[in-house]
Image 1 (cartoon, chains in turn purple, blue):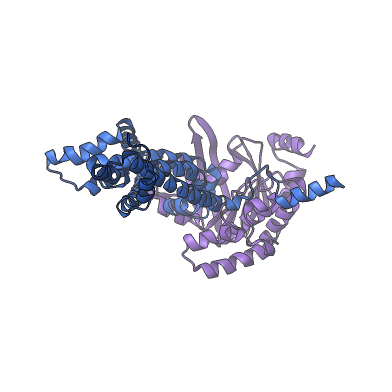
Image 2 (cartoon, each protein chain N blue to C red; image 1 turned 90 degrees about the vertical axis):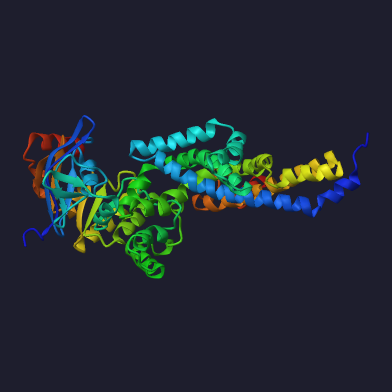
Length: 257
Length: 242
């Protein structure tokens, strides 16, 4: 029962790029329906952590479970063994991801971007996937853009399509990797509004962001990561008013002034 | 000296025997391109593989095919292999020889096309749960196609003419038929000029097809940067006039 409640569970996760030790034993748990904002200085490993959660990166030690199931690996007597591509792909279906640079498929329309997963991965009929894509476009406030190509959309619109694309797979967890960092200032709120609405509907979300207003208003917890470790894990009100560590305080001083 | 014979030139321009040879050139080129694309895609993917052995296999194939003359390859396949008990027809030899050779060149073009697709596209495709093959088919190759088609078209243009090498193993394509007709009728210049005209017509036709292909794959990316649309240009000119 307690296990079922956990959408994401990372235990002692280590990640190395060659000799560079990015993640140095990350422990993190996210319950279903929770919104967790991950903050930390650049290079602290926030984005790498998200990319490990859906196995876009391998890990060298530790365990990552999403909804109770190991992601990308199989447990054996000798430790973790990486799964075959098709099995990893199946694990990723339940984890939606939104990227800093949107990464929409430029050769497909907004509708095509959203329905690509349902059609080509889940094998849904095109007609139904297209209907669902239009419903999701309405949800992110872009009902009239179904036939637009990414090149014809603003950054904020592209990011909202990217959110719809991730939602089309009906994920259990959504990962947001600095979703507003590449946007012009006037487009940030339209994306944050969609994310806020999503959290109200009970979506489990892990968000790497520098938008402290969003963290304050929407997050259940703020996780402060520094040098590859979780340094603080507290409710936002507490983190912003009384950070427990010197490093947390130093970080807040830098970004709030 | 006989001089140039216009009447003969015009007569050979619609000669069914030569036209048939031109048709052979066309279908041979298309078939070789199809074989080359299959081999080239395979070799390109092997070259990009995580496994060293697979990369080396592809590298060896490309090295061998690009490092020896096509003419020698064709002669070895048709004239040399029977010595080992492998007897191939003229057409089989031409398809194998030209196809293997074309595949090696296309492999590098296709590899460059795949490498031109930004890493974020691979991430995004994986993140929506696409396995490798689906990712290639739905996301990567359609984008690579935009980069691949100009050099690929260049290769096909070359291939239309390179098939004439198959004449040395007596495949009756356009050049071979021209030579055979000349042996009967002695109109050397007229007949070769007709053959040249056919080649020119085929490559021109292909140029048109290629332009349409490029337009098709470029469409989602909007109008070519730097060139204003007619309507806007007109409006600006009108403003200037006032």
